[in-house]
Image 1 (cartoon, rainbow over the protein chains, first blue to last red):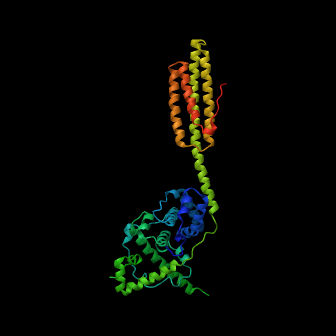
Image 2: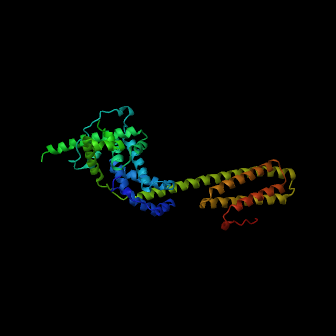
Image 3: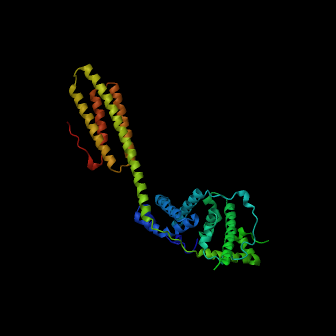
Length: 192
Length: 195
């Protein structure tokens, strides 16, 4: 997970207990802690402000309705983050009919040049670049590289194998490189 | 043999050992690390508006709907109970007519007492329905009452079909009334007076 992610914040046990007793003020405090991080995660996956806001709305209703199912066997912020992630991926699947990489496509031409240079160096707006990735590439990329989920966890989110996550991430990087180089080239040849 | 991109993206113990001795893979790993550094520093996106009031309203609305559904289920149960009660009364009236025609005012006072008991049963049942609809009631309490009332009602129906004595029927109606009365919350016990 990114160091500056809002999901790094720790929620006190007392606050969780109050929320589990249905205290609406406790829910508001939890919302205030994670609203920005939830929105950022949802927006980066779904790429639309209105959809991201809907995701946050529905995810928090789920958090409030299911808070009693939280059993303190992990961090509360991690539990909330998973709910937001599932909600965002659900929206993505519904709105884009996300094409998932087939297991047959796993044998792929390996591009050893992919990391021979830092092709992100010349990119000015990284967020804009990420938005140009196809929805499923973007989702896997965000979950692995920004949110810090591993391939096993991503496979669970998508109900696919770990190989699916590995191949999709690799392809997402390849696609991102292509877009980055194209964008940099366009900038170089753009009239002043 | 160099590391694949996939191996570079999620390093394990062997891959790390390989990086120490392979310059090419080491450069690739450094480039990847530099790119990841840029990704880590991406600014947190902020929502365009504060949606808490909207979320709160949706949550409270949803809860209200759930509570209303629960109340509606209880109301339906009590409406059904009233219908069952009415059916019992029809049976009773039919039985009573038969009784009056065949016995010509024999033990009329006993019958009048029975009629009063049925009326008071009806009244306190209506009061109980009103109390149940107005308050949050323990669902188990409602179900238990339903079962016990059902047993007495069936016994009563059998009593009328078998045309047993008014004295025995009176005992059953009294039991029924006592059962309903015991279901009221302590501070709302109705006082049934003889009409």
